Image (tube, rainbow, N blue to C red; front, side):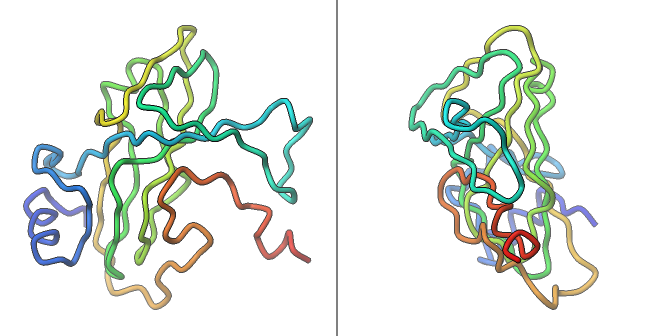
Length: 179
């Protein structure tokens, strides 16, 4: 069941859900908007001829209050907000409709698992023919939170736990890559 604005607010008040910093103006009827942070990662295309699932990917780190995403370009970013989900809630990230209508696709890879703590790394793709300029602090996406039918037996403790900046792919750390 997707939880409402009223439930989100109560969970934060009861310290069962952490969204920091929290501002009520971010609440939507069935989600909470998240803002763009000021940390980005761009794949270092000059140092890599090909990407594989088995090798570490090189990124250029960018810290800026503004960034321009060229047409047909991919960039990792982070949210301003730190999230901590209890073991009975999961979440997923959706782009805001107004932003998507500009041709900017926003997601994060998969679910935000129960027990996750950290800032959300966002995957941004400019599908437009024009560059898109973004500013830190702007509402960019929304976090939709859902209640599990029961508390997770094995809450998230994975390789992205505790991230506080944009974090690149760690697929090379998967068990099948390590063999």
